[in-house]
Image (cartoon, rainbow, N blue to C red; front, side, top):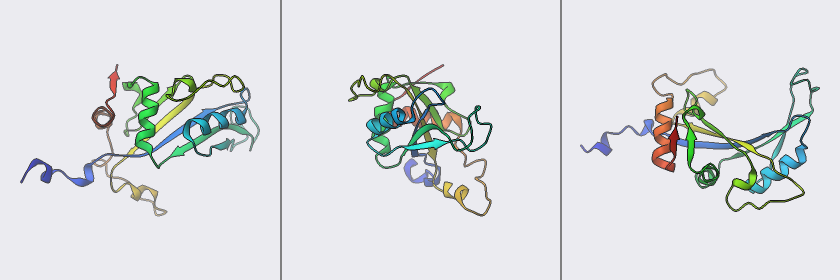
Length: 171
């Protein structure tokens, strides 16, 4: 048997989704945030609303931000977002379950994006969710868990990003 045949297919890490988020609060217009996300992604953005009465001192059911989830073409899209960060990520950007989050300070840092004076300059957060085959178990209505050996660890996520996206990890 070769090394490739011995590798377990269920241990392969893959990119599940990329989520972009702009938290507006009460200062920034949610329409401005929605416009930026739609320009960057080319898809429709969703306005997020508060759920509880005490969310940051804002009343219930009021707009507080905007988000977009990318599932189709996520690898190419993530490469564009990493270019905005010059293919560098901090080690602290990785959480203990293998997800990655980083911020883009200005939307004009993204390749192929032009400045629009009507919008101004606004940044956003990028959250990358990684998974392994078999992770749909956690999405079932019946309560079930992913085994501790199957959960993606921080070191595995770092190696995945280095190998597949050519990212440099800084301390």
